[in-house]
Length: 443
Image (cartoon, rainbow, N blue to C red; front, side):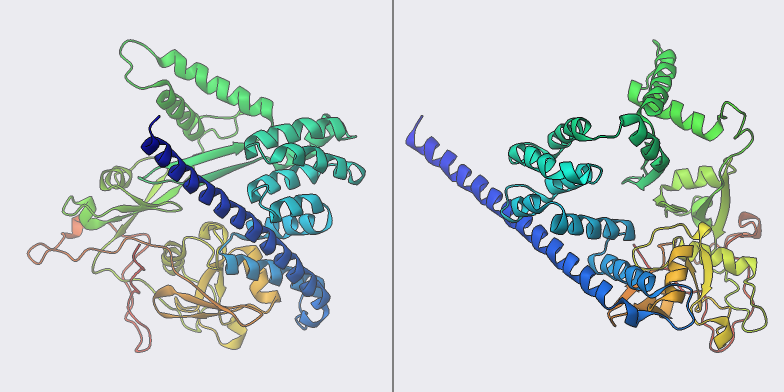
């Protein structure tokens, strides 16, 4: 090897050393964050008695807990469940796993490694935790987080006094299905259930996919699995017949000019976001399970019924559901379809049933607004200005909806090209202080 080659390798090695040093700094910062979170939790609990809402349904302790979790979540831009996990992990590092906290502080392990230790240690009996922690930390410094998790699971089985059957009986209660939006009009569906059920389901899909392979089949096995599973979920039934004739309804918003082929503006799939124009046109053409919602450049909506009616009319409900799409509390992603339409200024305090006084809040966030020190004020264009119990402010934006494209000056869409819109019926004349349809925020 030449001297120049050796010098280049040493220079590259020094850069790897710098990366490792930065990673140790990140670990130390995570340890410091955990200490600060736990200290704040202790302070919140100590001052809980002062924060009860007079006449509220929640106890002082409940108010303090929910205010602390919610404000930590919006401060860190975390979902509330993630914030709850961070609080629990910080408490575990402070009270139950001091050696793990020290290893994190020194940069010997990453926060991901610490989470593995915490997650596995939570269900280890207190008397065995110290030995469990010490055994894993001997290897944690040179294992990946996934390898450490496997080692931890094996060790936990040896140390845990309860049978795996007893623990599985409890864990199976946490089974769930999740979805996550991906790029380029794609999404992921995740199933968390008993290992034998998940593997059996995967095997059934694989066998069905293999049966479709042949000389004329151009799809890969992975593509066939995806198509088989989607077909089963959309059109199949359970062994007892549940699901027969049932198909979920999904709203798809399509600009009328896109539907007519005059523009290539994307459509909008509720709960996901933008979809390509061809897919939007296909779904709007009558695909089973999708409700067509057309937007027109010159169509308005009913924006307010003032003080004459408390109940929100359907046209306004539909429009607000498309505007919000999710719960409007900072960071919450619960669907608007499963949320309450809340009067930001309560009806009993002369709040109007109007677009600029209504927003979707899921039941949990609705209760948080009613029972704690959080307050909200409507700004222009559907933005909400939230003030936390400590006086800090946060703004939430409406969901990104399809912005109508201005029609060509020489071509007005004929009436036959624009069927009655579900989400955007013709508007009544607005009052002087009632603006026209607020324009949705861009991406």
